[in-house]
Length: 241
Image 1 (cartoon, rainbow, N blue to C red):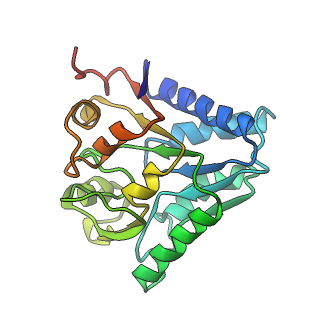
Image 2: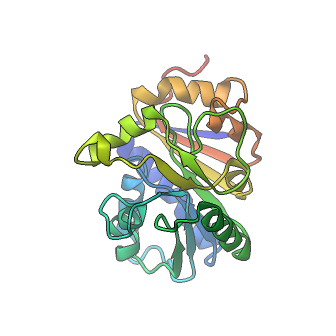
């Protein structure tokens, strides 16, 4: 695992955007796996800025997203479809983008369909990840096993609590989501994980320097051959010396 320590969130975002840009330059028709949440917003903003300056071209790039809330329509301003268009897709020339369809009633069918999309694209070249306070990646919550493929997950109370700030009330927060499985994520050729803030320092230590266990889903990344962690000083403040 390569670790880049940055001064703050903005520097973390620029460093992550540099890594993504390098992937696009090296392989213009690459498949990027993308994430949502507060962590990647600065990275997407930087990529949009470089696109507007003519420094990067996404014309041959295809994207697949990690996850989507189950039950939210794509015009809902809290859906990840809406988030991705607001923060990236509407501002650059990405060739094609795919997300799980949160409105599909047959969860098993939608999960199988999404796995087939990823396989048909030849897999993910670079997967961007954030890190949840409980170690979740995508919506793979702490469990007694590592889920292999895209699946429908019941969100844990801590995740629901963390997401309630985006909704009018906690009752509006979806209780389920579709997410790439751990196996799907681990098949990506490269993984880029971004983390900021002192509130993530304990889980960064546990995930990347503790035992590999499904109770800390991100710990599985220790076994991936090409992982880059970009984190600010605060998030790295409790690493073993």
